[in-house]
Length: 299
Image 1 (cartoon, one colour):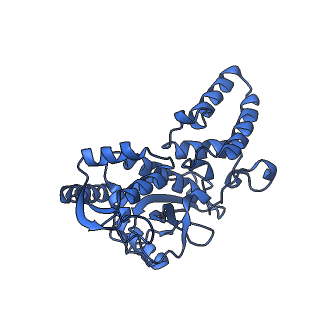
Image 2 (cartoon, rainbow, N blue to C red):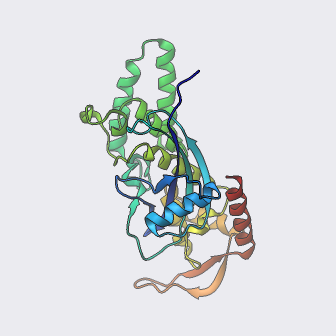
Image 3 (tube, rainbow, N blue to C red):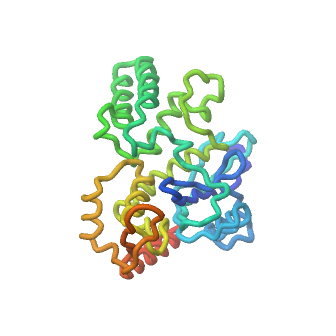
């Protein structure tokens, strides 16, 4: 028989908002994601999550969906094995931005809105090539080269913004982030704030899920005020995707799909010409609500 393990279930949340064109996440001390153990008084996993988030952040969550279950050994240094169930939650713009941090502070190589961060990517690729050369067999070397080419392509047009988790795990495997090696490999560590336990891995999973989701469901609605300009909409999508979009093509796509409608009002710009204000169409609102409920129930 195997040795009995001391196992605890933890509920963690990646709470996302967008402020001034920047993707924000709620962080606590560590820094860490809001989290807490599943308790016997929690009727469901999601109720437990909402209770912990309220206790730590005083935030009422709207849209919530389950991400993944993280059960690797040695996730913490405490000896106890902690199984963490991660969730993605979206919050609308709010004046109180306390405890909100830019997610690119943790993943600076993921922000390509002003073009690829060449200095950082060159440093990453240099270290990845050294890792490839250390392969003990030709097959391993070929496999490593393939992973490097997919996750950190030299041609920026081949960049796949959805591979956030795969890139993070590759950097972990090669010892380029502090969570993997501590500070003993300090000279080779790349930029990016660390997080408590494996919370940066959970965050990577949340970013990847949201980047994929905005392409086929109107969840971006959750991150915008009720009325917005098309520029606000585009900048919100760009903030999440980490890439710049073609203005005319983006607007043509949004209007062709019938996602928004004019409100008849103009924005109150301090400088420049006022822009038309739009709102998501009511049919899209109903679809978004039904989708969110379905996703919550599946957890």
